[in-house]
Length: 321
Ligand SMILES: NC(=O)c1ccc[n+]([C@@H]2O[C@H](COP(=O)([O-])OP(=O)(O)OC[C@H]3O[C@@H](n4cnc5c(N)ncnc54)[C@H](O)[C@@H]3O)[C@@H](O)[C@H]2O)c1
Image: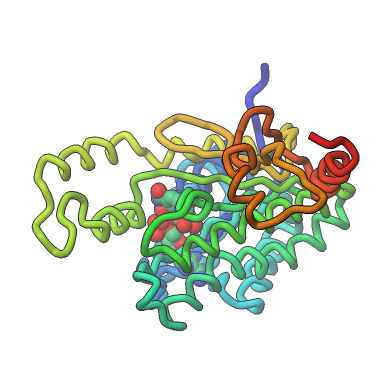
């Protein structure tokens, strides 16, 4: 089997000045892609700007013999997204891959949620993916080829306390991934997502914030902290990038899928549906009395699209259980 190469391909990686994005950019560039290393710089909460992190990653890529250009526009506005895409077109004349990775964190308990905690998180993670991908999409449609990799999170797919804005944005990216996969299919564009787990400043902050073993401001349990430290050492962000690279490659056969990636393990997340319960005269009491059956995962399945789900629903109305 040959190595997966990206010669001739142009990739945009957002938030590539550090953490996961940096690793994605380094890997793609080492396999021959010309890479736009986008990063606004600034704090993890999204405050401030700094062109240095993106420039440093570009320098690193060039020193290793790769090709890259730095871009420090924010993905959080439509103008910023257009400018990121413009950087790619000006530098390299095409776009084959968009990795939507930029992110910030502003965790708060839901009852303390304010617009200034919520809006920037939605703007960077969810709308940011729109802002960059919409202008890139036209280029991809025209050339009949493209790969988009979104970055979702277990915090959104499964739920995690204090992360309502972040979780909603990340779950929104699941919906965007599914819809774009459907829209891109006729144009050679495949769209997938990763749900990473990696030791970056973001994970460190999440863990510190959760006060492992030390809720309510009490000092953290040293044993629990040591366990977390050992665990995070195995979470090399470079072990997420191979999954991103595969999903960004021409040979990637799947679209609309979500892959968990961390510590060298790759797995698939999916939205499944139980067979359910049917009664043409359904009452609230029926739901109560048949909850076990409604929730029963035996013979559950993964509907490919809303049509398949609708077909199942209609079939069950004609075949009484
Ligand atoms: N680390 C994990 O375990 C984990 C888990 C689930 C999801 N994620 C997701 O992975 C992605 C990367 O996170 P990370 O862990 O590497 O954290 P990170 O903080 O190291 O990286 C995020 C990068 O995005 C950049 N950025 C922020 N706002 C931007 C903007 N408006 N425009 C351009 N760049 C911007 C930051 O400057 C930073 O370099 C994020 O989307 C995050 O939500 C990470």
